[in-house]
Length: 258
Image (cartoon, rainbow, N blue to C red; front, side, top):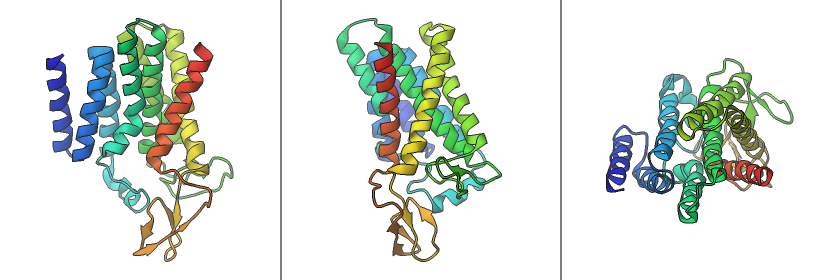
């Protein structure tokens, strides 16, 4: 156990040194990693690593072409503790419950893997989708918007989300000896998490319209002015949307599988 905790601490520290995590993100990664190691040992930790490493690498791919996102997104490439919790919080909770249940019930394993597949699907869709040459469209109105806008979809981003979900699902199959059917179902649920995230991003995620340049961003202050809320009913930030989408996906899977 001690060896595992030291390994998690080392990885969290290295991620901070590589500027993939902020200091708070490093603390969050250690807590999430420790909880997952408690429940699913090295297999769970390896699967978490598949998500984190792949996501971090994708954030660096063609980073210069993504520089425009700094003008839209409220946070940068360095993940803080809230971003870590949004993506890894539920898998960590499932791992702790699995540990204290003291059972080998595959349901918990499936839900754990599925929740990471949903997180990975959304992350890959966001990181790769922003590289699309054409402008994405809002899911419901089909209106063309700027790349990086929450709630928008593109063919490239959707395909990346599906591949991201399959990546975690197939790794889960190898690590936990799951069937091909389990892998396929997990892939679909993981991609569904990405769809939930898109819907929430369009409907309830808070966005602001700059009074100066008229650009819609996640930043409350833009062009040195406080922006207007683009939707009076929106109240959730991006981290809350990510966490909620993963929770909805996992709860739906739980209701279907039990």
